[in-house]
Image (cartoon, rainbow over all chains, first blue to last red; front, side, top):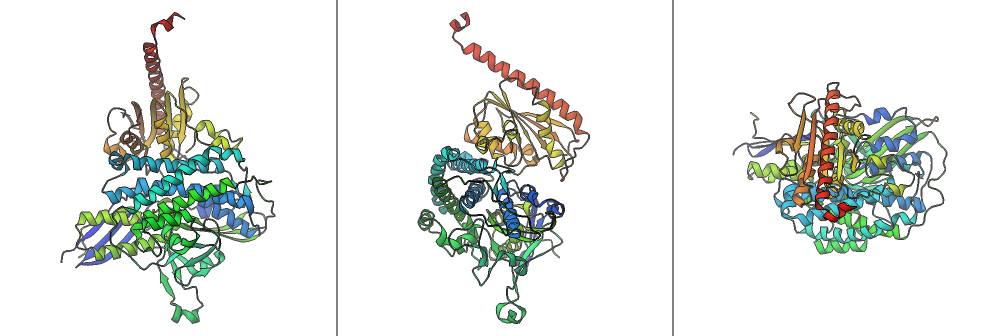
Length: 445
Length: 191
């Protein structure tokens, strides 16, 4: 049996810089390395000594695609430390802001980055040549998300209007006049997107994942909830580091996350101590929170024949479309019921202590933990982005996919492996604390 | 991304709602000011913003390049200045006319942005709304790490590109004015 390998020096259509190497020998995968060489940015280090109130704007700079997620996780962490609970219309505005980010991020990934893989194009430019209406639809969706974020956050990228306790300024009802109509059009186009993606050709590949996502009793999760899995995980956000830990691997600048057992040592024999890789992101949220989707999003899922449990990671493109539809639906609900709050933010007292925040970024759960001093300065910070958490699962997927498709030509295998990585919509800049792909002829001797 | 004209005014959050009105010429500086030489496009734009002729709009873009599509839809001509990575010496200036012919593939891959400006221009061409006049200035940088410091050799390139863009802007707008005059019915000139 011949030796074969997959080597991609620079992964395209992902955010940031990384690569992939899969080595095979005698028909078996001998090595998989998901390498992140985007340099680390040391955000956690330079947050130390900064005022607690600077964290939302500093951490938003970690990512140009999901800055809202960073702002949300940081303000929730600070509010945890200050025993502050944001409710009512301010809470609704935060959900609305997250809707905007999900719509813009998911639309970009579905149409510009992931769809070309399924239809055999090198990129969105080629896709636009043959399917201009689909690409235009994606661009309109994305613009609607951008516009919503701009209304609430001050601007689409590097938002500046979120603060601990609420917002610096809240919109008036009339500020939503234009976006409401475009959001209703976006909802129709998101429904079309669900059906369009459901007709794409999906490789036959499944895995029995441990899905990890937030879960809230009353709503599809954005900002709040317990961290749960399809196995027996059900913890409060403050228990995150008891269950998840990060490890450094020599070939990557991003720490890899794995799961420990959530049970005490005496129960390890039955519960299993090492749980290893897990999957966070749209597929996890969908499988664990399907009943919390809006009726319209559930109807679209049924029509697309994508229902939980969905274990084919390539179908994440359909799930992103379903979540886009949900976000449009939820945004319309919030806008139609909006009453401006009396104050743009709650008053609070700065208190020393630990703050924990975990919210659902478009790519999965984003964990922040801070230690705040009595002087309001950040003494310590820990940030675990979703791509860092998914790294090990990506490697596991690659190993399993190549193993079961070893007969595939090297060229096809390489393309499929790239597509597989893009199932996760990895954000390498965020993770670097990540992607270029290598499937190379195996040179292992 | 930041529209320079909006970035200074946040009196009302609604003012930040991106409304892109049709204009004769758009000049776009692209870059990330926290990643070393990647900021060079922004710096060129900031240097020329006060000298641009009437009828030209200036826009800074950082991060999400899809807003560039909105600008391409809504302008008769566009000049884009961005940093590039290349084996050419630092400070080398590329000037491409991309309105009539595609951006060379090598240039696309040289961009430092994931969904880069050249790819965005090609996407607009594929979708049929690329303006007929598209100029791309690419300035070769050296260091793209996390710093606000620029490589010293770029200072001269910034001045050269700034002057060249202002010349381009003048000629694009005067060509357009001549065209408007040619298109006007002759009796209009009597007034």
